[in-house]
Image (tube, rainbow, N blue to C red; front, side, top):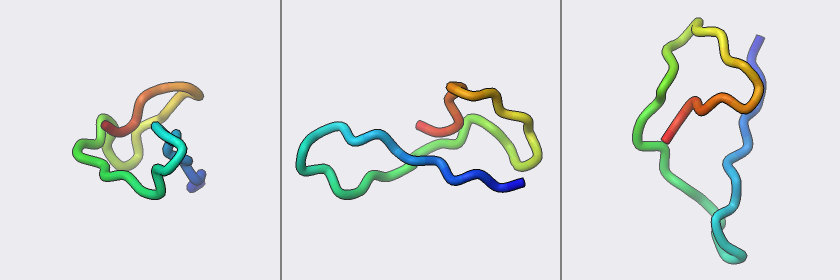
Length: 38
């Protein structure tokens, strides 16, 4: 089941960000609070 992930804002004027690396692969289980991207 897909779950939306919201990127935290790092500043008041931040409107977008870039994911440079995923730390999980498709199908991996993810626990709440676990890092999935950098």
